[in-house]
Amino acid sequence: MTTRILVLGAGFGGLELTTLLSEKLGDSVDLTLIDKSDTFTFGYSKLDVMFHGASVESVRLPYKNFVKPGVNFRRETVVSVDPATKRVTTDGGAYEADYLILALGADYDFAATPGLAEATEFYTVAGAERIGKMLPTFSGGHVIIGLCGAPYKCPPAPCEAALMMHDYLTKRGIRQKSQITVITPFDIPIPPSPETSRAILDAFAERDITFMAEREVKAVDAARRIATTDDGHEHPYDLFLGVPAHRAPKVLAAGGLTEGGWVTVNKYTLETRFPGVYAIGDCAKQGTPKAGLFAEGAARAVATALIAKLRSGFTAVPHEGKGSCYLEFGGGLIGRVDVDFFSNPEGPTGTYFPPSLAMRANKEQFGATRRARWFGL
Ligand SMILES: Cc1cc2nc3c(=O)[nH]c(=O)nc-3n(C[C@H](O)[C@H](O)[C@H](O)COP(=O)(O)OP(=O)(O)OC[C@H]3O[C@@H](n4cnc5c(N)ncnc54)[C@H](O)[C@@H]3O)c2cc1C
Image: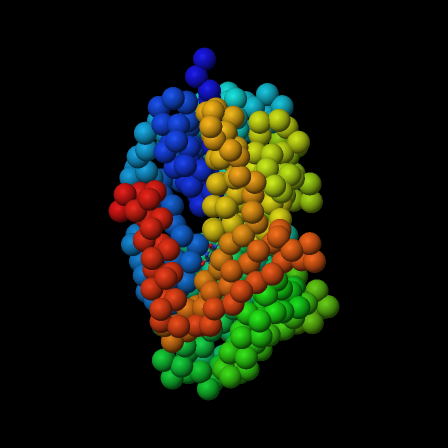
């Protein structure tokens, strides 16, 4: 019987995994990819929508362009996962698999922070669009970029938003009338890279941006415009850029796959405690931050493991725990940090590349290669 491989979620992890499997296994396996959406959007596009007036339509990449040999894409919502039998139910049918890969990303837990659902956030496309529409009439005041918990997607994104906000308010001539504060549970902006953190804190000091460390937003009162932190302090604001608490999608918790909110895996193989069931990317506790390149790294490890199982002459490559994050510093300049989470037994190590125009070209290339590789665009 043809081997059935079922991939749930067509984000960074699911798209790369399916592409790799299609390249090596093609029509010889029964490869199904399921996603509830009809389009993919890069996480960082939300910053373009918010600050640069990019339309939502312009940053969406339609799955109808994801056409790969042997891949059957289904636009359906997963409603249950039974990891013991590898049976999955969706709103469109039921599937059985020999290998099941969970790549459903992280969900936002609005209920964890009272009042957040009525406030503004920039971690959904709709939320970023809403703030982007509010900005032109904003006349200055206190802007809070408030994190409601960790881990969260793309550790640098809140700091990038602060630096981009500084640029935006400066261009509008209202920076003098404004304050910008980042409230974060971390002690420094990018904990695995003190050098990157220092560069960000220097940039904040130059621009008079306040970094409020080791604090979390616990409640938001959108009517009174108050964010309350975990120490009970109330912080009045004029514009709130929230980052909701994250957790793995409920459907995975209901399947008994999560512990402490995330799918537990062997960090080198990405296999869950259920044989033949893997989890990659943001939904998994895979030992790295929640970011696109780290999801891709996990996808590579699972792809090589499955190819090695199904084809002689191939060797599985364990998950390396390496990846990069780009950092928008404003003024068109971009920096980058490359982090290696597994090689050094003492802890993660980071290499920092200072902001430059050349790195902007590098980031654009990063997006362009994925658009071409996955969507043929
Ligand atoms: C503001 C912001 C900026 C960012 N900037 C960067 C950056 O510069 N670089 C970077 O590397 N990362 C960045 N990220 C993070 C990056 O977007 C994520 O870490 C990455 O997308 C994770 O990949 P994934 O495959 O695990 O999940 P996702 O890409 O989130 O994909 C999960 C998929 O599962 C689908 N899904 C979920 N539930 C169901 C269900 N029940 N049924 C069917 N389908 C379902 C979703 O529709 C989605 O397509 C940023 C994120 C944000 C919010």
